[in-house]
Every structure is written in C-alpha cells, then in structure tokens.
Length: 259
Image (cartoon, rainbow, N blue to C red; front, side, top):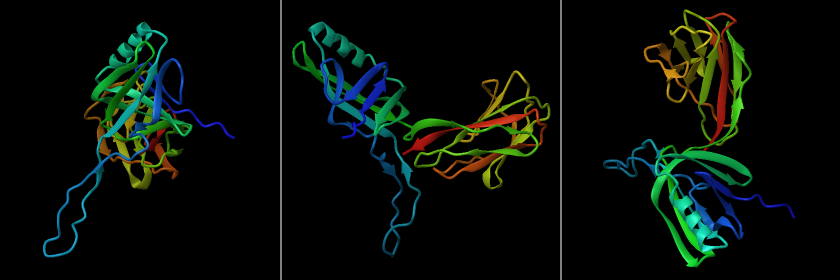
C-alpha cells in the first residue's frame, strides 16, 4: 500500500502535523478546514422586474479563512506551557502560512481571524488547540516558474503555470537603455516604459498591479500605455520586449496559482 502524504501546516516557526504523535502539535481528523474549500463568494442580487430570475452580475471571491484544530502533546507541564506560549505568540498581523495537502505545498498571507484556543485536558500531557487565519487575497500560491530570457529587438518567452486559475507574472528587465522600451504582452497588450534603464537598477513590472519598480523602489509617472494581463492555467502565453537593443533582457517569473 502506498504511503499517504502527510498533512502539514507551517506558520510562525511552528509545524502542525496530521496523524498522531507524542510531542508537539497534531491536526485532528477533519481539523483542517478552509484550505481545500473554495472561499465564500459575493455578488449583487437584482431581480428582473416583471420577469423571472435575476440580472446577471459579476461574482467575486471573498477572503479565505483557514481553521486548524487538534491536540498538543508534551512530556511535562513546563513543556506544554512552552507550546502554549508559542501558539499564542504567533503575531496577529499578516504572516506567511504554508499548507501541505495531497503531497503539494501551497501558501498564502494570512492574519488572525479569531482568538486562538489552548485548553489542557490531560495536565502535563495534552491540550486541545485551535487557531484561525484570514487571507484577504484568497488565492493559494505554489511552485515558481522562471522563463527563458528574451532579448531586445522583438524576442519573446513563454509564460506558463500549472495551477487551476488565472496567474499573474513579475517581469524583470535588465540592461541599459536611456530611452526606455516596450513590453509586448499577449493579445496585442503592451506596456511602454519611459524610465531609463541602467545597469545597476533593474526594472520589475507586476502584471497584477501595473506597478513599475526601478532598483526596488516604485517609480510613478514612468509608464505610457500600460495594459495588464493574466495567464490561464496550463495555457502558455508569450511576453516579448522590443524598441530597444539586444543589451536589454527580460525574464518572467510566474507562480502556480490556485483557488
């Protein structure tokens, strides 16, 4: 019989494992809720006047909420207290949360969604725990894919990912060009960069937000036309670079994106 992949949640330096054990945090059966589920959806409901049904309206995902519960084991009251303090010490603000399920690890940025619980039921040996995190960005992110390198003069690279929904990319442009350049996206989309490109200050363009960073700092007023785009799961798109010399190079990084 094949080994069953272990479920693991990692947050704030702590690991919560599926199954059973004698030391540390373990997740109860059905104690990991909200990661495999779709987030709640929201939409405006407008009835058709003098007709059946409703008008079509855009549907959006709300925040994702993850709840983890189970038991914490220790060999002394002191050690149980240490585990309690570590659980309660997980910061309330946004923290990276990694979840391994079905043999695949994905992550998101979540903040405290409810008060954490730690209730001792066997003194010095065991306590029941529970905590929740809320993810304003409901998407889950996985493996990072880095494209080949495109060079100026109309070259392009293939962008792809293997999630189950639309993904965005971070484009990194290096080289030198005092007059700017053009990023050519799929379907006739384009981004005109007017900021000079220098050897010691690479550019990054985020196709999710439209933000351009120069040497790591956001640069406003440095874009002409700026179209945004996303890449469908399992369906490659191309991104190119033009209006510049072959000293200018572009690399696209894209994460597997899931909902």
